[in-house]
Image (tube, rainbow, N blue to C red; front, top):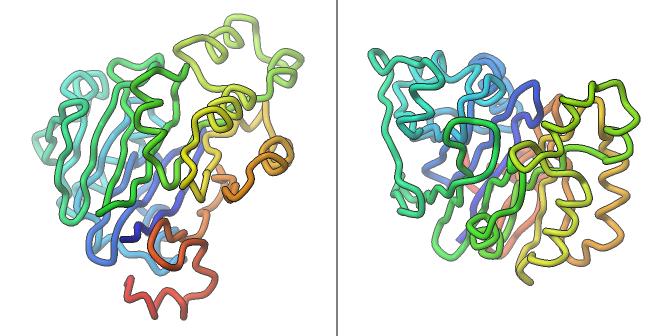
Length: 273
């Protein structure tokens, strides 16, 4: 069975990922505006009509900036922990907020979503594994460090969104003050390019066909640097940069035709929309 995935935006200016089947989909995070979310879906022939729920990793504004309007407009349930809800300040008076329990799979239409705790300087941050049949895609951003729980799910992924936030030399020699540098590189901050590369090379499963390198820093990283680092050692795994400026295109994960959908006609043939 296949999953169709797209990064709508990935970075400190907003995060939002689409994962779904031909019938049901979810968004993970809603950090760009509701209008921009709709635009980026439409440009890829995707539709909010397929979206059944929004899952929130944590309460930082680049992950929930467009949440309230999007959830209200489409009457979507929002899944977040109670601590994340309290820290976010979002009221459940006009949107439906549901809790989730780490490591307990939840059914959302044809999808199964499993949350797992991660290390980040938020109140109660989580990543997610999304499964349809025998195909799984994971979202591993704002990690701080690679924990055993995150590794457990990473090793199940046919594709993964993996944080590759900063180049160590660019961070060290850039204009950030020392305390901010320490926050970024600390165990509750972000993964460096080299940490992401080590995770990929050491723990990727043999069936991982796509790796979306995500949450790249605007000031301490470049897509070219990340591609150069990963591409030469990626083997059969396709390396995709999840942009902080535009949508990624739609990728098919699993099934008999994995890879990027190159044309709208091809998408129509798959009865996605």
